[in-house]
Length: 228
Image (cartoon, rainbow, N blue to C red):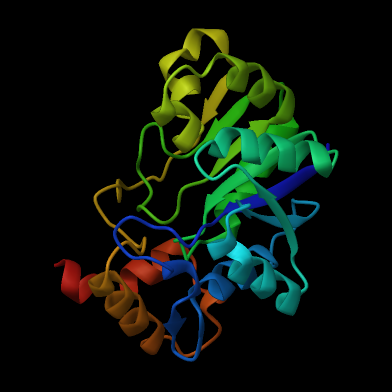
């Protein structure tokens, strides 16, 4: 089964424009996520799916510099963009990952991909219920299921966020969830604000080896003093 990770990324964030390429410790934020995903053993490739708007030319240039595949499509209809990206790579499933998740634990992507290969699932998710921190979200979507769902997405929210249609019509899809033994769903490692950037930079400062060597529990342990 051909599974490719799709990072959805755009410059036009409502709360922090250009966040995916903002400098964090001397390198673009998005590069941390790319490095992590490149450690995966259970996927067959990586593509950054961005929009065809001019402001996202910078993301395409970023991809060119890092030798990462880039697909460009509709800005608002993320579901259609990811579907066309999947079709262009002739893959049977995609891993949907948000570009604002620099500390993503690649082991969770491998776990989701392994589960997708193990059964006839339409969607494998670790967000329903959410027991992993925000910024550790993994959704592996079968391409044929995404094609079917995208045809029926009637509201902008569904098209923008891709998977709500699946959860709202769960009886129509084969959905497999996986969870953390401890509920960390209240924690947030996404980047939406300037404060988030500062926080992520501080976490990286506390690491004494490459960031991708830290699993999600290791990262939680790093910040446990602040959490407690």
